[in-house]
Length: 222
Image (tube, rainbow, N blue to C red; front, side, top):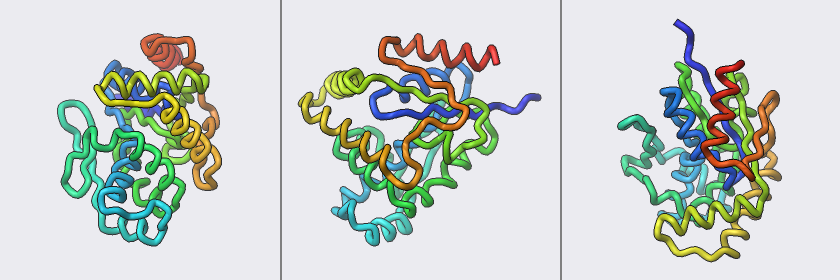
């Protein structure tokens, strides 16, 4: 029986990684791993207990005493922080920006690395993030880098927030996207980049379904 594959989908905020990765995983019958949710989980805990995200010592202590766990329920992986299902609590812009910041720290990345790799130990995984193909799963069977023009990414993020019934200011979203891009690309540890051997897909003028079809077709053809 052929071993199930590991597929990585990296890219910047607002490129459509989550939507595409979930759909690809569903079509293939694979597990979907949202690695950004893990960093958001730790960022959420830091903000909750009022730890400065610039205080590396305090964050190191937080990592050592915080249990981030993944539970596979009804076909998807749910993230828990010290037994709490954090769900939508980690999806705010504040948490997202904090997550981007703390992901620059080695202690934070190291605390989550094994957890991510354990999920893919048996294959059958679609892993979404910013360093999946370059660091976490460098030997993945298929690597994709999903991108889009920044104006489109800002628009998508704004629509996503409003669609959930939350208030949002376009200029604030714009600033957050710019800030997260800068942090992700300029961090010394595991910066956002196109992984070696990755297929680059520009989703600016494509629907999510069209991107999913491109990914699936490439896997099936290859």
